[in-house]
Amino acid sequence: MSIPIPADADPRSSTGDVHTSVTRLADGRELIYYDRAPVRRDSWPDRRDLPDRPATGSARLDPRTGDWVIVATHRQNRIFLPAATDCPLCPSLDGRQTEVPAPDYAVVVFENRFPALVGAATGAVRPAPVDGVAGAVDPVAGPGPLAPTADTGADLLAEMPATGRCEVVCFDSRHDVTFAGLDTDQAGLALAAWSDRTRALSARPDIRQVYCFENRGPEIGVTQHHPHGQIYAYPFVLPRTRRMLDRAAAHRAAHGSNLFDDLVAAETADGSRIVAENDHWTAFVPFAARWPYEVHLYPRRRVPDLPHLDPGARAALTPIYLDLLRRFDRLFDAPAPYIAAWHQAPDAPGAAEFALHLELFTNRRTSSKLKYLAGTESGMDAFSNDIVPEEAARRLREVGAA
Image (tube, one colour):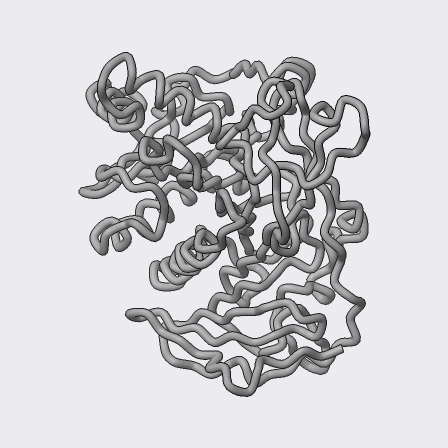
C-alpha cells in the first residue's frame, strides 16, 4: 500500500540553516529528511509492499511502584543485526529498497516500523490511581488508564493504550561511521533533528515526555549497526524523571534553590570530576556514578529541553558532545559501547525545576570486561561501581589530550 502526502500540503520547510522535506513510506509512516541546503528528497517513492502498521499495544501500571510497563508483542519480529548488505537504514541503491527511499541523505528521521508506542490517545481518560486509592489523582503518572482489566481490584490492574510515537534518527547515510566520526556540521545537523522533533512531539496534547537517545554497540543492546539514534514520545512521565522531580521539589523546599543549579555549581567548585567544559557547557563524572565511565553534561544556563537552548549554547554543544564521544572511543583498545541519554523536562507539575542534561555511560569497565546488571542492579535498582568516579574522570581527561 502507498499513502501519499495530500496534494495541498507543502512537504518542505526550513528554519535557519536547517531544511526539511517530508514524505510517507509505503505503509503510511512519516519520514523527514534534514539538510543544510533546500534539497528536495521527498520525490523518491517507497515502492515496497509492506504489511499494515502494528496496532497500539498496552501500558500496564505496576501498583507497587507507579511505573508503567509497555507490552508491544509485535516487536518480537523486529530486524536484528542484519548484514551491511541488508541494512534497512542505508539509502535505497541499486534496486534495493530500504526504509529510506532516496539514494542519498544527510540526516533522516522516520517512524519506527516496530514501535513500542504508536497512535494518539482518543476519547475520555480517567486519572491514574495513587497508592491504590480509588479516585485519587496522580498528575505526573500520565493521562491514566482507559479501562481496567478486571471488575475487582480495578485500580490494581490498570491498563491503558500504549499511545505515543517512536522514531529512528539516522545520523549519516554511510553505514560504517559513528557519531564520533562525524564532522561538526553533520553532527550539528543530527542534534538539530533531535531538537526539532522534541519541539514537534512535545506539542502533542497526549505526550508527557520526549526522550532522545543513542545506543552504540552490540554489547549495549543495539539491533542495527548503522549509526542511528531514537526518539520515544511517551504518554506518561518516566520513572527516573519522576524521582528527579521529587528530589528537586524537596531540595527547593529545604534550601530555596534549584537542585540542578546547585549540583553543577558544587561539581564545578570541587573540580576533581570535571572532564570538559566551554563557555556554555560543563561535563563531569557524577559524584555517585553508577557506571564504570559515566559523564553528565549540563548547559550553564538551565533550560528544560533541547529546543530552549539559545544560539550560543546550541553552537557550543556540538564540539563538546563530539569531544566526549571521542574520549569514550579512546578509553580502550576498541570504541566503547555506550548509551547517550538526553533527559528533558516532562509535561508535569514541577517541571520548571528540571534541567536538560545528557547522561553518557558505558557498560565496559576494562578492555575485556563488561559491567552486567545482575542481582542487585536489576533486582533492587541498587548499583555498585568498580571504578572510583574521580579516577574515571582523571582517565577521561587523559584520553582527551590524546
